[in-house]
Length: 127
Image 1 (cartoon, rainbow, N blue to C red):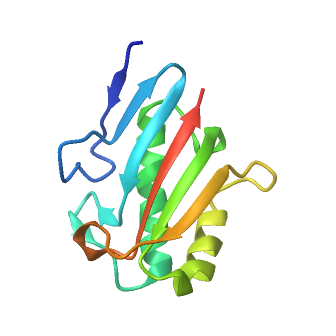
Image 2: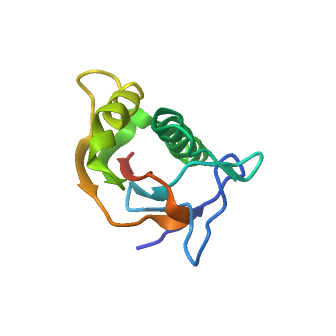
């Protein structure tokens, strides 16, 4: 099965040996995004709402580069450093999806995330 590597300068460059996204068999697998502002290359971690907003904007940019949108997301994985921040993350996250068209999802608390961020989100989208 063929695969297409998706890259955009509208989302942060990978910080390791992976790609922003890979498209294969009608599915798009978007790597976990953290709150790096792609224009300034700085982390947005001073407020969990702003951090989640930046993460979702990064995901949107990768989806757009692949010719897709959030409406095509079928699965999300949310990784949180502190589950006590779930209500704020959930509120911001939810604002990006059309009511009734939300994807499947899991949210897990983890001990540590890349660059010591508070939230990381990955998605799978379908054509």
